[in-house]
Amino acid sequence: MNKAKKLSPATRRVSINLIVFTCLLLLWSLPALAAIQGSCSNCHTMHNSQNGASMNFDDSIPANEGLLRGTCFGCHAQGGTQALVPVGADNIPQVMHSEGTDLAGGNFAFITGMKGSGASNGKGHNIVGLTETDSEMGTILPGGIQQSFHESLIVNSTNLTCAGTNGCHGYRYAGGGREGIEGAHHANVDGKLDAPDKPANSYRFLSGVKGLEDDDWQYTRSSSDHNEYFGMTEPVKLGCSGGDIISCHGSLGIQTPDGTISQYCATCHGNFHTIQTDRSSGIGPNASSPFIRHPTDLVLPTTGEYSLYDTYDVNVPIARTGAVPDTSSAAISSGSDAVICMSCHAAHATNYDDMLRWDYAGECNVNAGTNTACGCFTCHTAKDGEPTQ
Image (cartoon, rainbow, N blue to C red):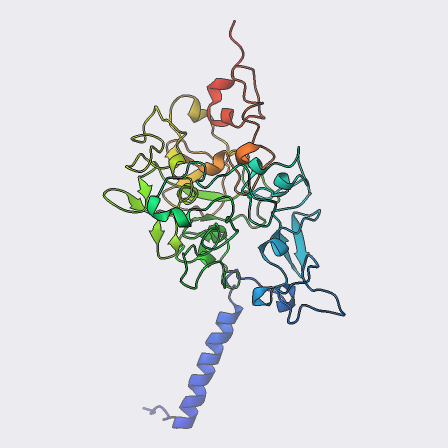
């Protein structure tokens, strides 16, 4: 019987190094996480000068923190003619532009009048620096829950930002050194996001929000090509703390406790979502009709007019409950799928007041025959019948 040849220590080290190197090659050959890729110069500039000209996307002179070629506005609200601006082999999604196609979040151009029926602060979230102070919003937000001990931190008409403490994207701390979205682009995870423990793996950098991101921000869209939102079967009592109230204060700062997009909206507009608490009247005392405000995070009933909404309408999106799906679907499941804030509103701005997806005051006439311009009738199908004699 032959004995195995004993390897020398030097030979063993070479063999181990070869195995490690081979494993690294295999790992490098696997698909990488969808973090931002491409040339550093696509987004960064060392001195903000090239042949005497600014390197900022909007040609502005001031240099930006992080050696970036633009602020949030400078990168994503360039005000050009394209919804997707190419940079290298990638695209920068635009939230302010004049192209006919808008991305899923809407378009700030409707606020400024660059696009649509005319400039109006009431058409969207008026971010500081976009236009003048929002004359439509006071010191307490629409649907906001009065928190006397948080008055100095309430988002108002003078301090709403894209990211950070008084914004929507990234960490929402009141200090602490981790505000905003620093590092989120480099660590970005695309696609299905069901374990959002930091902005980079949260839906569109909305801290703690679950969902399935459409790969082109819904530049192309259809009943089977769209974002998938995550929701609950019924809303909860949401607030800061105490008793049976579920807190929206978490490890990421202000965030959604259960991962739903509607709860995220409710961190500012709580009365429009939460069950009644000692600080709010909410949608009412429970999740049963009659409501005093339209409910969200509530499943579509399986009976009556609601059951007729059976094919996904990208103009009236819904949320999936239970789990984030792997792919987008055209199917609607009443009794499981839920109405959400995004069913009626777009996040940034639309051509209609209150960021509505349709002209609620002008196009939603009941018993006027089929009216596809009014999204109310997508769920409330029986309200759009022929006039009775």
